[in-house]
Amino acid sequence: MLSILFSLSFLMVTLPFVPYFFTSLTIPSYSEELSVRQLFQFIQDELYRTESMTVSNDTLLLKNHNGEVVSIDQYQQVIRRQVTGKGHEILARDIEELEIQTNSFGFDITVKTIEGQLYEKKFSLY
Image (cartoon, rainbow, N blue to C red; front, top):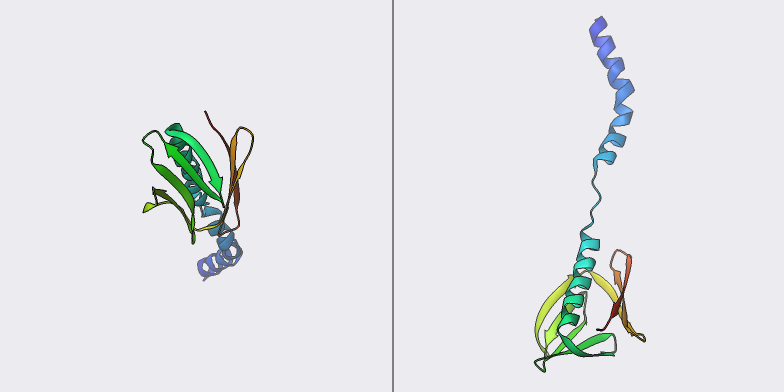
């Protein structure tokens, strides 16, 4: 009887702390941030192959050395890449807004995700 009473009191004391223990075990997800960073890396890689660049209506137009025009823009909730207006390569998903602005040395990209996070990157042309 005494052991049952002891185990019951132990459960009564530790039971309220169980939810706090499980919430501390949750690992934060960085998949959204990694997705946007990968998008920025794709754009940087594309810039290495670019001869000239223009921005029109939040669409980045890059002319490569082969004369092909690569466009990067937002289509619904994704950011896509097209070559000479053909194809549909998705670079990032769950994007609420894409904003591209030119500056004196290149351009700035601001990406707002569906979850409300803002990511910004400045790109320079070589």
